[in-house]
Length: 394
Image (cartoon, rainbow, N blue to C red):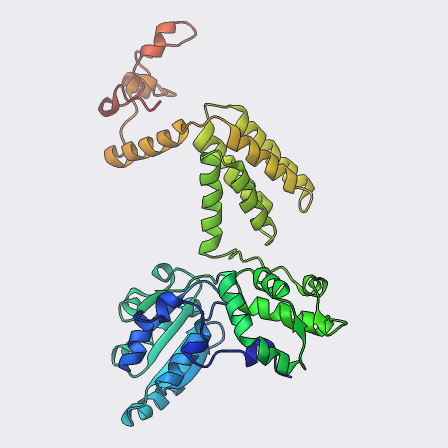
């Protein structure tokens, strides 16, 4: 018996009930298909929203040869074989689509091999990536392709797909029954992932004891599939969101995102390190205890570790959210860096240089230095080089 996600894969745009901003009436990809001329494209982010399916539909509509390659396992040699066939196809006005999944996994040299064939339309490249193309794909290749950003599926879109295909599922599994309420539950538990919802439904069908699928069957079949790209852009999106939530004193949203990171096996010490930074960047000197608590939480997390250390992180996040805010330390870091870049290696004033040798004393190292404990007026002596006299950072 064929898996549900496989036999329900749409074969045309009519069955492709999502990404309306790309394939709806008057939208770019539909226009390309109506004109019969499809450019090379990059399908970007997130996973499991129909990038491969849409590429297959495109190839079917324009009657192109379709080759699936993986950015992880495929090599330049594999591409060469495809190019040889594509050159033959072009003699008979037949187009060739190369779908390169995880294109960001190919290095610069590998990506460069695609350039001449994309430029001369020997192949239509469709690259799929969960990463930001600006950072992971060569500029030369990007300039020869259209970038289309896919969107996460709403549960209503997943529900619509399930409703449209319920009869097919019932025929495949001998007329199983499922209520509309439970179908809605399946659509929501997929966490914006159609394939996950279909897998949950399939598992529920297999473990059910009666013909009708119950809510309990669905919950048993549910496997959490929280999306968190630990090594990619989403990782930085979430940690950035935590910082901004704390800055705006929204501890609730910060704790939610901390939990999301923890549930996808993020190193809790990484999270504490970011909160340590926040305690100085956005709080000191308004609250001197923030950095002390952050450092204590770091030690506690290192001692206890997961899963018990999660409460330490939430305790710290709540404290930082409620604390008064001040970015003096951060502004000082920025301004001092700007001065170093602008003025370069300015000399230390002679009066505050050390004079460990006789020669240094003779050339006025340490001359006119005032020792504060003997002369309180020493606080008024110049410590900056001439170019930065009277500079005040805080």
